[in-house]
Image (cartoon, rainbow, N blue to C red; front, side, top):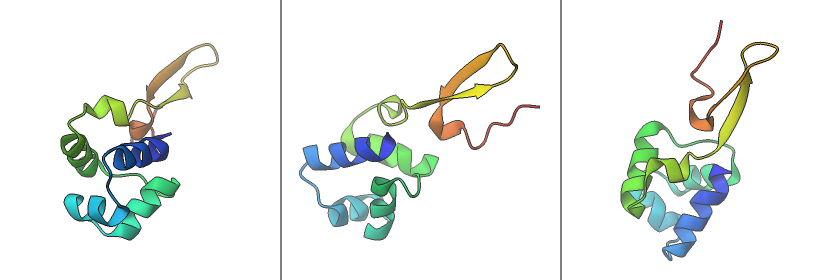
Length: 88
């Protein structure tokens, strides 16, 4: 889950939530929400996180969800995009 990946990245780099939040330009409460899975970082902040930790965005967004497009076909997409993609 993305929240677990964010916690792991932050802790592996010996950062407190407050320090991490400051580097990203958000409040500590925002980082706390991300880490609890109550909210997800926007694309802007995902980019900043990837840049801060020198990692590819795919490392953070590697989660996938399955959307049933027909009774017989499933498509897997990164979870971060699941809320913006709509199938007719």
